[in-house]
Length: 219
Image 1 (cartoon, rainbow, N blue to C red):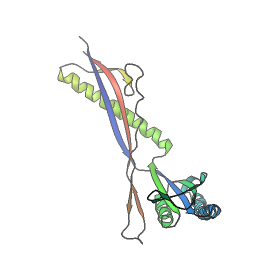
Image 2: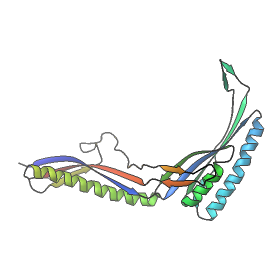
Image 3: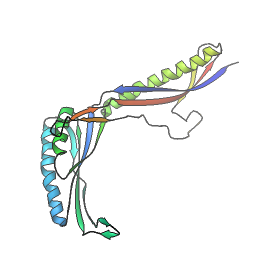
């Protein structure tokens, strides 16, 4: 009688970070709307000029400064009271770095400037390499599925397993829930001995995780 074995294989491969996308905001608030906007623009201009210079040095691949938001609100002062009308101007800036040493210097400089917020640093591999890394991870996940299935077959004294179905997780018996996308976990370590020390950015390795469902038979 033919034995049917269904397993899920998985693989998790690690690669060094190759790119970093930093998101920043030039944000100014005050009692005068036009003054708040002008002050935010005054911050944005040298910031974007530095990004142009870094792009010329091939430290930055792409950058953008497109989103502009100007709004007003009355802050709560407590006891149900609101303060005077305050105007806020926010200019979003993002840039993709491949030179992490220059990225550290860039963030170190701008993080100490009034009116500048460093929203996030997102680490990743390049899109071209991600495709090849995911392909490697899928092969490793299939190898893991074969190893698991063969272990089951060996446990019941059966022969070599033969793959009859391979699918993304949850799709062996037809479309089901959407399979999880390959995952990349990212982190950054910010180190400094004191307020005057330089910033040291140490990205975690990028983790590519892939899973596969597989069905085998064994005689």
